Amino acid sequence: MPNTDEYIGVVISDVARLLRTEFDRRVRRLGITRAQWLVLTRLHRHPGASLSELAEMMEVEKATAGRMIDRLVANGWVARRTQRDDRRVKRVYLTPEAERVHKRIWRVAEATVEDALTGLSAQESRRLMTLLQRIKKTLVSAVDDAPSGKAGVAARRPLRGARGLNGKAAP
Image (cartoon, rainbow, N blue to C red):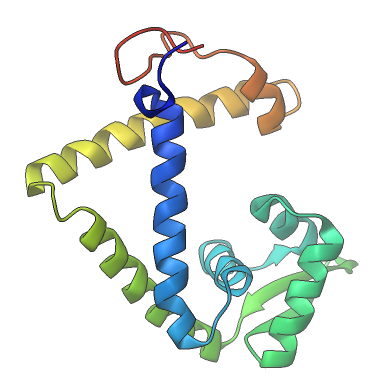
């Protein structure tokens, strides 16, 4: 079994966790929690998502997502609107105030990533992005091809040619 620091899955996970931790630290100054910025970011990318869709995107239970939305509605950051063709479905949208908050959050996110990439040249940063996009495309395809369309099913199916950072086949 390879050293975990040499396994690409562990390294990617560690980098993502450390970026979130640093971003959380920086964004805390704006008076926003991780749960709040996650909702704002998802809704910015997917305006009009339903509660179920939002819960799935955030990988939380529907009730948990509902409580988050309730707090954001109370803060004046999101609004629920009834879907025209199905009055049972509520769509969630950012308010203009939340869009302004999202812009501030985005600037913090950009600065956090720029600082994390300080040790890389511009060419290395572009290459890293190209490689990560290719990996993402492969994973999205695996998830989309899974019988249920759920990540859990695709995650059990090994990817062809999966390798650790040391070039050896991943476990």
